[in-house]
Image (cartoon, rainbow, N blue to C red; front, side, top):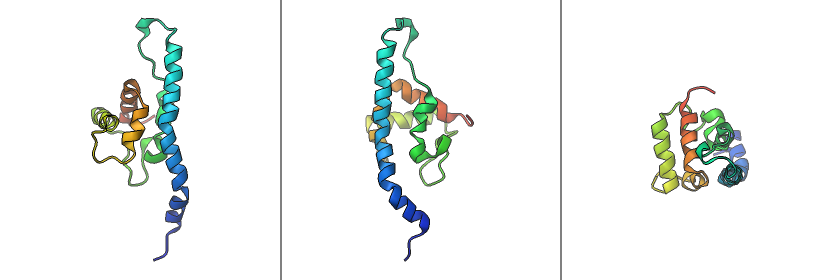
Length: 127
C-alpha cells in the first residue's frame, strides 16, 4: 500500500517534532529559573510571577496546534473547561495519568503557577 504524501511528511518531521516537544520543558525551566532569580529582588508581597503565558503556551502548539486548536488526532485545548485542564495537567505532572505518552515528562518542566496560568489561558475561547 503506497504512503500518502502527508504521511511521508509526518515521518520526515517526526525527529524534529520530538526534539521540539522534548525541549519545551527545558525552555520553560530556564525561563522559570530566570524569572525566579529576577523576582528575588521584588517585595515578598508581589507574589509569584508568571511570564507572558502566550509564550509558554506557544510550546504546546507543536502538538496541540496553533492557539490550542489541534488539526489532527491530538486533543485541542482551546475552550476546554479550566478545571478539567488543570486536573489533567496536574495528573500529567504527578505521573498519575495512565493514558499519557510524553505529557508526563513535558509537564514536569512547568511549576504550579505556570500550569494554572496555562489552564486559564487555554480555557478561554479566543485570544
